[in-house]
Length: 261
Image 1 (cartoon, rainbow, N blue to C red):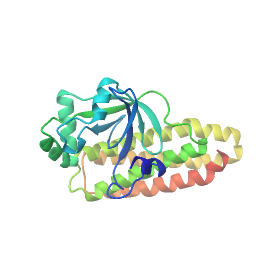
Image 2: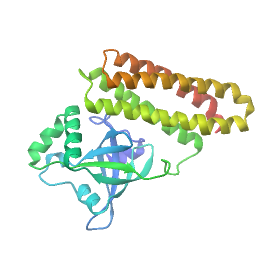
Image 3: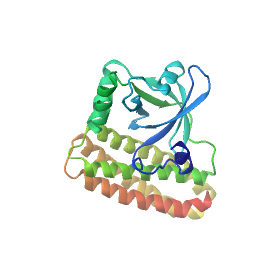
Image 4: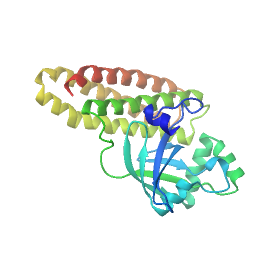
């Protein structure tokens, strides 16, 4: 699966084709050698959550012992590789987060029961610096960011459509995606777009159009955040509207800007 993950930019086949997956590389507590594991994960704002389930085994997984010994890890999401610090959650925070994950997938509770132990929950906190692994040009970097948003929106759309109620973790998924889009578009409007306009004055009208679309998307994101905070029956229509507008925007950016990048 790890080979398939790396060969296909983070995508794998059934039964995990729609799962959020990452590769976690740790340093062996006893061997000192690098060890890579494929794990399911959950978005959680500025960090990512993983669970030491080991498939319900009575023993903690090796990767967990490794991060306890050395919390400095590497994370691959298929599109980017970045350094992170693994933080083992404890006490009330661990219990609250685990309850949220169980609400999203009761399988975690089943694993904990069958294992006879308290499953550890670990937050992977990115260390300072831009995401990336040195692959390709600025254009390819931008495309990978866009691909990440398209994938996450598709997952959220599927989750919203399948959910009878808006659970706590789905709220976090939505808000994390909104936060990421806010950050990305702010960076483009304040950094990338002015740089392109300065070098290519003939693109001024296009940049104005893209900035206007950012403003329109920002309004939709604010509406989506409000609906998520106070769940309403029109959540799916809001998500569909956002996906339609954002997809058109990303397609336009790529078609018009990539040749200049």
